[in-house]
Amino acid sequence: MSITAGVTDTPGTTPATAALDVVIPVFNEERDLEPCVRRLHAHLSETFPYPFQITIADNASTDGTLEVGRRLAADLAGVSVTHLPRKGRGHALKEVWSASRAPVLAYMDVDLSTDLAALLPLVAPLFSGHSDLAIGSRLSRSSRVIRGAKREFISRGYNLILRGTLQARFSDAQCGFKAIRKDVANRLLPLVEDSGWFFDTELLVLAERAGLRIHEVPVDWIDDPDSRVDIVRTAVADLRGIARLGRALGTGRLPITELRAQLGRAPLAPVDGVPPGMTGQLLKFGAIGVVSTLAYLAIYAGLRLGVGAQLANLLALLITAVGNTAANRRITFGVQGTDGAARHHLQGLVIFGLGLGLTSGSLALLHVVTDTPHRLIELAVLIVANATATLLRFVMLRVWVFRRA
Image (cartoon, rainbow, N blue to C red):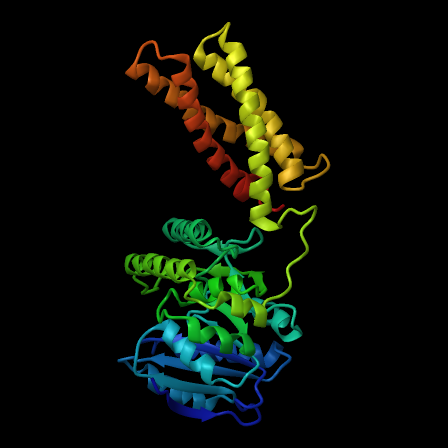
């Protein structure tokens, strides 16, 4: 697909000398384009320490967007417009970023929902070489976000899906505020297949798998109530993209090993032979879980000699839950000292309550099926229920209780 360039008027700051190229992909934005570009241009002119370029990427608009872009390019130094006859935000970014000569590339949504004060912190680690990509995060603890409950739920749900399916560790895939080094873009962009909204996610997953460093910037973000994004259609397309990318990674179709060798940063050395990150945590959690389960079964069997099944289950779970939380706090997630210990144990008891509901519910269901189940059947049902509760426990410990660790 060829790029049809529009008017460019950049005296003193040409594409050849710009250190940063900020791309604004637009489709039928004739009303909002001019005030947003002028606001961005003024901010960069007043605060940005490097030469910059703003590229308006018109995605086959059918209104007056292209004419507005051409007028801005003629009026403002460092602004250019590119017309693409095909729709798709991902397609626009891929085409314009590939053609750009700036060493650092960025993009933002035309509505400027993100506070522009975050732009310099976003790109500074890329100029210094500290990081390879940078993303704005609306889900950081220090971010200040104003948006409806539906969008908040969808955003957090989508990122949980990414963590569960593609093992993504970045916090916010879809925030329209990202940057990448040009040399990294040259290697990754040819591998990104999506041309729509999943483009961001695919690029970030590839970068993460290649061992690149992704810098996250907490942002102040105000939802645009006039957004014309079709949430349902976008969600379906994203789920299809996750399935496609998962298959590509699983079958080895993507050259991840080669990318790691060329671009990836050397990982930290394992401590005591235990791999870092989630793999090491799983190994430690699993070992503690085995010990806890054996202790639970021994305590339950001993208590069952003198009390009913439900009370024995309650006491055995409570005793082992306290010990399990303490062991995972110290060993699995490396939290030392007494700071936050009370809160951690309180959260552990909440998780214990969920586990109790699973195991007690399983016992209650068993006794509905048969009035006098064999003791071995009781134990088998509890083992299955405990395995489910254990999986839930690890997820909640990792993403809730010890998230900062």
